[in-house]
Length: 262
Image 1: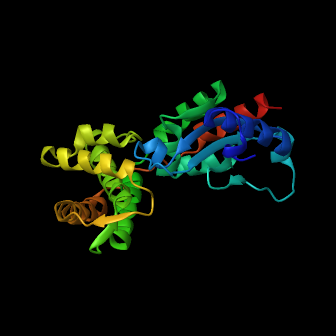
Image 2: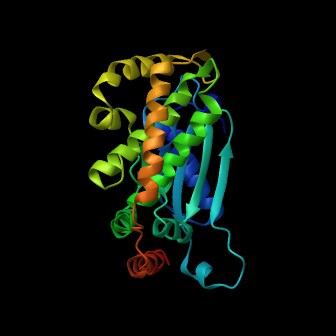
């Protein structure tokens, strides 16, 4: 069912899809959130909804010898993009300090959550690595800048795909913890004061523009971005590896959760 054919809110449609997934796939969804531009707080009028979820299967599934799929791709149309990760994959990526997964865990738009998820994230949060996360955000900013912001006319949404990860690096450098998902919260705390007004104007313009629309490049922001990319390349390279090697807490919460779901 597409949103245009549904007589209800997007939240109600997402919850309906979650029930469909649980029934068809024989899983329990532990946490479901919005990700991407709607969670970051700078969606365009025609942005779709990027729903991400974490699920667990019955205990006997994990004990079987059969090849195991650790993700579910459920919906992809002009309105909804819904997919999720198995708990085992989720915990393996928490061990790696996957920055995107920490964003899902801290999304301000939560469609569904459970007590089990709170236990899972409490066990996983200490595995956050400043170096790993900063490397991810630096790489994301660098890639998007060189691919999308060097021409005379650019998509303004791409500025936020570069500025947000740069500000995430600044947050991690300052506070040594996962950065907030909302762009405004990041900007209020760590964006240079001289850039707050032009970035605020850019944000208002971007949120009123279709995804594909282009406008003149903003040289002031490009100069700032180039300087910050150079700084964070050197900063990340010089950081010590602070990942946690131990698996005990993650193994414990995995076994606890699948036993509770049996």
